[in-house]
Length: 451
Image 1 (cartoon, rainbow, N blue to C red):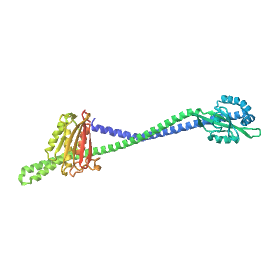
Image 2: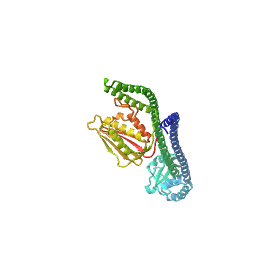
Image 3: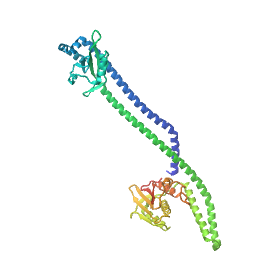
Image 4: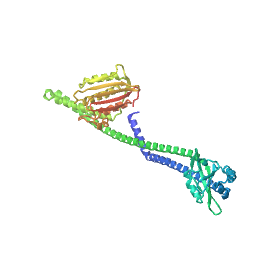
């Protein structure tokens, strides 16, 4: 597929993406809100079920506490609190039956002083006769004549809950408090449900974060793609304009060159030969510049064939050394290193980089240029390094852009053309620079990957 075709596909794609960006952002936002709402709703449902279950257990235990207080009666309870043995023998079977029939864990009695007097299982008497301190609040309310329930508590790995009812004599005085203890079995199930909700909530938070991050990077990508498309459109327009201007300039340049040649042949020594040479050199320079401009409007044509890069690099370096300039150090393997590419275009890349290195080291006391070739399983890396002053950091991102140059007579197209040719081969080029060392390294794949 040609670069022009890819450009048009990218243009159409970006217009489509730009049209759906608003709905896509709304969809991502709604998805995140839906996940958050689902998490909140799930947690609220869990808390609602927990409250209803606890209220149901409270109601059942308080009803059983009232029933037990009425079942035993004030006389029997008063005798048991007073320590009468006959009362224990009479009330014991009744309370055990109540525990069994009511599905309870325990039943116990407290005196008005809140001291434990009796419990069916005998659990709490073993602890010294005092109930856990966190249940004193409901006990005090029961001594005041109310039926109350405790909060959940845990003993021996079991979740339990108690309810207390006053045992009153005929005068309405509280002679004892009866307590019933039940197992909060539902809490085990709810604890599992809570873990599920917490896990789901955590998953929802992670998923919402991932969606938000994805939307953020998608927006960044779309913004970068839009900027790249805008630059591509601008460069395309500039290329067309430059090509038209170059085409218009070509004919006058031919006339000027022909006129300078006729002047030299007709008048010979009567005119300054340096002046004629200067005209011809400038015409050639402008002609070369127009060729560069014309290349902007044309697709990069690659004629690939098996190419020995080791031999090509030696050939180009030898030709470059004949132009004069600093010595070039070669680091090239002795054997062949074959890639699939266009030899003429690759020669142009190397010559452009070598000439660029020569210009960069023109004011360096001991100029040096080094060309190295390194093989890789996927392709070949070629590096051109010099010991010039380096590229300033603020210029490194612009150095491959067309028409950008820091030279007085530069066209700003040399490195741009280099990158076009390398990318047309399916490769890429990178700049690394610091004071005293600058290198351009480009990669060429071994297998055909022509763009």
